[in-house]
Structures are given as structure tokens and as C-alpha cells.
Length: 245
Image (cartoon, rainbow, N blue to C red):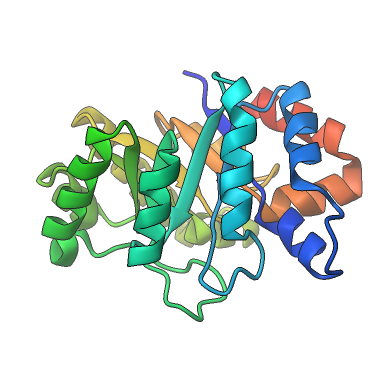
């Protein structure tokens, strides 16, 4: 199966914000990436708006109205302001992430066992207005089992552990991590749960992750931005689409 490659725009927004101007312009790069064949975009607005701003979400959503085949995924902690944003924008997908207010980056998934009722409720509410609700989860078989018993139909597996193990070489630790990720992906998909993946994925470690099972979507931003600086955006996009296709 093919995997949707979704570009996370946060780092482009961070570069823009560092100068207090509209350069680089996010919509310019959204259009450029669409022309290169990208079919998905991810944003993660945080309360301090240090990269993606809430206005960016509205602007990108409006721009994508002319591109019906492009998926828009909005990530964030389900606080009141974020949920109001989702209800207004109604993106194709909303990924719920348990970030604290001052968190630098996402570093853990939801405890599905503890928050099952809340996540099931939000899943049903978003489905009612046409938004797919995904939940950020750790690569833990007990969490996947809890997902299967809940109303959650889509998960995004947190892949930092995969990236670190891959970076450290193919050893016994990597074999254990690989087996656990494989078990989680397969258990989820065999029970009708859609599997997305994200965090620290890059051109080096992505293909092996996708070989483990049916991963429907990956969102990549930090590595994509750095790799584009090193190799050129056009070249990097072609490589990601080839891996995902």
C-alpha cells in the first residue's frame, strides 16, 4: 500500500516568526509543495504560537479549499481553544496530542487507558462533523489494546524511539524496538484501526519503518526542513514520495 506523506509546516513558520515578517510565506510553500506532488500538510499550533499561529490555520484551510485532494491535519492538545478551532475549520484530520503548555515538542502519547472516555467522546464528536480524529500514542502494545476497546479509529504512533534506535545501529536493542513497533502496527491494523506515524522520521529511517506493516500516513517536518537545506526541497520531496509510494 502507499503511504500519505504529510509535510509538517511548523519549522517553516518558526523561521518566518524569527524575523517578524511574512518571509518565508507559508502559502507560497504550500503551493510549491503541492506542485511537487505533496498530498498532505500538518500543522501544530501551540498556545504561545511560537511557530504555527492560529491565523495560519485559517489561512491554510482557506487556501486548500481549491485543492480537494490535499489532506489537512491539525495537531494539538484538546484544550478549549484548540477544540473551538477544530470545530470552525473542520480539517480532514485532527490529531490529539497530550502536550503541556510549555512543552518544547511532543514527547509522549496519550494514556488511552486513563483517558479512554474523553478520547472516545472527542472521536465521535469530530466524526459527526466530518473530521477524522487521530490520537497520538506510544509504541506500547497495551495502549494499542486499549485503543481497540475504545471508540478511537485512528492512531499516530510516536516514533522518536524508532529514530533513536535506528540511529544507534542494528543491534539487540534495535531488534527489540523493531519487533515492538511491528507488533503494534499489525495489531492495530488487524483490528480496523488506521495507523499513522510521526516524530523524528527522516530519509534514512522511514523506509524500514514502512516495511513493518500498513502505515497510512506519516508527518515529517523538522528533518524535512533540514534535509531540504542540505539537498534542495525538490530533491527531498521526490525521495519521500518514492519511499511512501
